[in-house]
Amino acid sequence: MTTSPLPRSSETILTILDAGTEMSHKDLVKKTQLSPRTVRYGINKLKERHLVVEKLNMRDLRQIIYLNRVPSLQGTGMRTTEREDCKA
Image 1: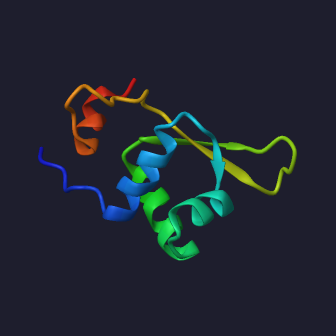
Image 2 (image 1 turned 30 degrees about the horizontal axis):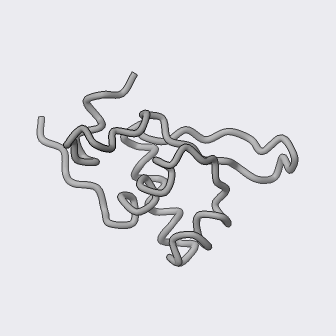
């Protein structure tokens, strides 16, 4: 089955999360300089493909923290869209 490529917003978010940092929605908006709605859309597309994990922020339970489910694949020559095959 062929999957459609990720939207550019999702790729941008995934690249930022590849650094191994956990970020809230607000932090991702600041870092990507995308609109809140675009970041929300990108995160939803990543969640559909099981590429990000969301967890509660223990300091502020109203916030959700996002992190990359797949370890960084930099230097392997794999494209972001190929990561779906590597999920655990």
